[in-house]
Length: 583
Image (cartoon, rainbow, N blue to C red; front, side):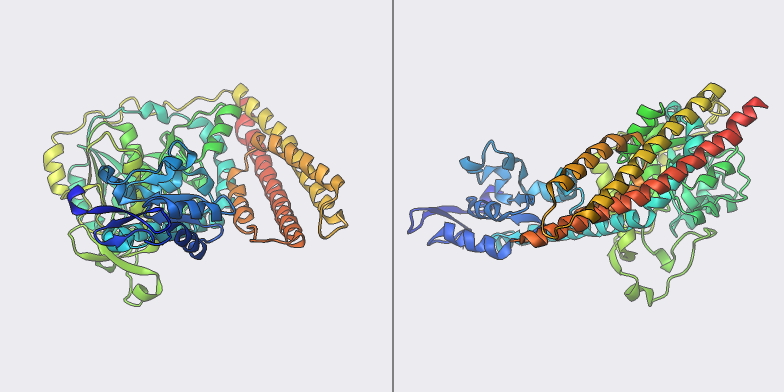
């Protein structure tokens, strides 16, 4: 890269230094500091993540940092940091800000960088700024940044919509799954138990053409079915070894009803649709998502349930891919992972969700084309494309130790995955039948004693008392808000009581389980009441009042629902476990 760029250092009329790269000035040749101040004023956006393409001599960085009124993150990317063509200015060295200065290699990891910044947990509004002439000197890299940010925003929209739509269902499912989880805490015994090839079958349209070969080699590999894919496999007389399910919706249960499975075992997330567990006669294996830190701590610290934390994403196939790495040291093949509408189909044949797409969908359902498995353009959607990006991020954040391939032969191209024809994968890696694939893996579920069921019941009964305390505090907080006479300032007495309530709730919150149901409330409160520039005292009071009232009232509703969920679990322990044990 060094030979591509001629960098000149020039003294300006004000005595400051400016830079010229390949005849393009990076700063004003007259007064770079004043120019930087005007530039920052024109480009600053409150409550946005600012991504500055071009560091130069740091003048714009200094001016932008002065403009940041609400502690907004500033990420700086400069290709001239590559090969040390440009140095970080001394005033920025050994400061907290230095960690946010990146070279061009960071562009492909931008999503990971954004995710690692704690302040951005609920902030996904971006302001992309190109320093003067950087978009001309590095046009391709600038376009890459624009594309990366667009991809991040698309994934964020999908994730946020999912949280807002499904959080209460997840909370309810966790409660209803609790008794099964208490018994199915044995996934760790599958850790690296296999060394053979694993084939992950997903329900994309191209799966149909892979089924004959999959049936032929089913005794030579471990087959993992991703969710509803089970229907396509069973219809073709293929029963997988494992089925992964994470979908909490009631309709997902319909995918598993009356399948009469004989050997398949279930791997399920803690918020999976609870009825699905009863469709599997063999033992099952529960897990938590790695992102569910609070839930995992609750299960471990309070209930002594230690579940493996599995890296996943928005689709069941993401979890299946990580679970395959968990159970085997052998090679892994993805089939049916189209993430696109191959042959104008949504799913493989015999999948209960399968349907054909019409041409009109391509304009009405936020669809667009991307590079496919064979290099040709193929139609996908925002949601499916988000899943593609998650696969690509998974192998960056946690590079697999296994050999892994995308053998889908249709759909999108997964960057970072070697594309391989499924038949070639079989020829290379599958040699003979796996003897006793299920030996030692049946009927060894964790045995829960009557004392343990009684202890669980006691813990949950104490939890009901904590819910009652939370409800009492939140109700009192709402009364204090309503009773505050001023409409411009909180009274000293009101502030004292509200602060005490906040402290009490902070202590009680970890003692109960309402993490899922609270997530959309947190999103709304953090994003819906942002401070304005130059806020008047009245505006500030109104904002804080409405924010606090929204928080308390919605937490109150969530606590009451979660308390009811826990009451139902206790009732089930009495009816299904303790009573049966006594009989």
